[in-house]
Length: 273
Image 1: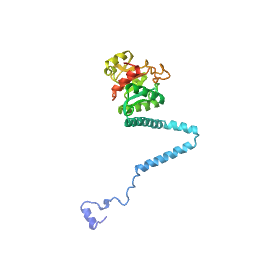
Image 2: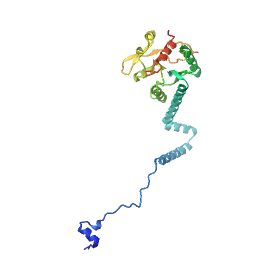
Image 3: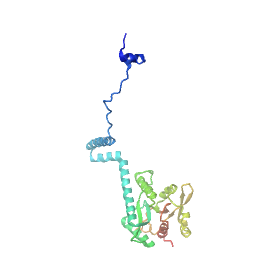
Image 4: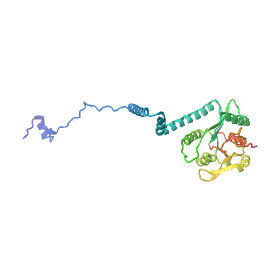
């Protein structure tokens, strides 16, 4: 039999069993501090690059290229896409700071050389009597799309990013593009119904050249003008022609800030009075 004395007896009388006393937590040992996120990220990349470096050391140059393209293709494409986008928009921003941009034509699948770009800027600039000291015109031919089965190809992805950014910034005034682009742009709400925006005399003059396609609501409207009769098409003038798609189409961007100049370009390119 166990006998309780002193404070133990008091605990027994109170109903508390002294053999089951509470154990206080040991605070002498603190939890080890968690590794900081920055250090963990640094350690991850250090290990990653070390592992990848060891793999690449054992490969030939050709094998290295194939390996890098196979595993880092998306990263490379996105990086290049952002660089192209940044450079392109950077040029636009610079021009807009230095000059007052009064017209921006996005040329889809219609690459221009520097000489051709200078030529068309000079021709149209003289037509509208541009103030060369303070105003600028832009013909950007850096929009390329591949119209095969790969609608989401790498080239398309980069160009779509560029179009989306430029439209959001209200940079583009008109598109000069092939038929396929017009067909894809109209349902996305990028283009004006030309019947609602062109002056009556201009609309009448181009009525037989209008291109109808489905818009956002599925209803076909006149979203573009066929420019194949222009003297500036390559097929009509291989020496001075700057319009390459067969046929090239003209469409006004829905949020253009230079509607008057955009209409003047249509008159200029088709030699309308």
